[in-house]
Length: 425
Image (cartoon, rainbow, N blue to C red; front, side, top):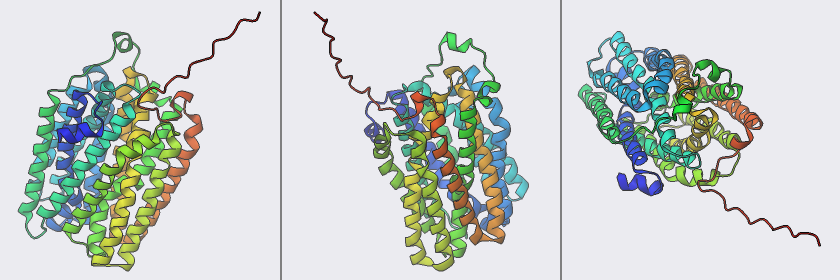
């Protein structure tokens, strides 16, 4: 894994690739669990799809409550400590999930996990941004996205081979492995330093008011919320939909997520390099358009196809979702690191993470109810919301500061020698 990460960008420092390695292990565990969490709650524990969707939403709701405090703590105690604390809470939350037998059990444990995630996401992003200079930051986040999705895809593949609805003990294995990966990430984190911020920056006034008064950031937040709710959050609902309406097996669901991941791993770095020098938000507007097209393909597979034919079409959707996902790290996440001052970076990432948390609550809650009552209406509605987000990102481009309009090149561009003026005689 070390050689793989170094090969993505050999110029990243040792602490950065250790952070990437820890993330890869962690997301391998998440990939084992997430594609099958709704199936576990619905088919193994007997909860309705609406209840299962609300459980997923509860994790995001916990992130909303804990996220505000997490941002302030990052700027005070540092992202490394808060990241470790978040990993412990997530290990406890998912590690005890095999004990779930009543809905309230699931709500309590997923709330613990969500509180951990509230600290995990902004602290990881803040720590990464501190370890990388601004010209390589977009590529570092692209590498993070690639390693994260490699972990999720491998985990989904392994989870598909292990999970069997007829054997609840198979899901116990999934949750225990996930908990172990959180602990493994803590081990890798022990060797990652936190460079912190300068004394002058740390002495400047810090508050969430400055973040919320940043109109461009608030617009970015709103668009990210719209896209995550209608795009990425809907990935949790693909497995039960295709299993019930397209007759796709658990193993094929695992392959779907694995193909999606392989596309991201192979395309992420070439796409990140291709994006260098291009306009940020016009590039990222392509992402929700690809997701919108993919959701229409998923809907069509459920309406008209079954089994092998449906599975083949769903792999096309996995391809589109993978390519679309590649835009987020270099074009969007790196922008959040650049748009605010370093001493407020924890708060910026915390508020940004709330867009994921709130969208993760709203998306599955509404989507789960639609899946229960109007399953074929879910995907066209999600596609329409993605198109709205694409239009918003495209329109917002002109409001970015001039220095952030384009994704920077990893290395400074060569400066052409200026002609020496000749004095007039």
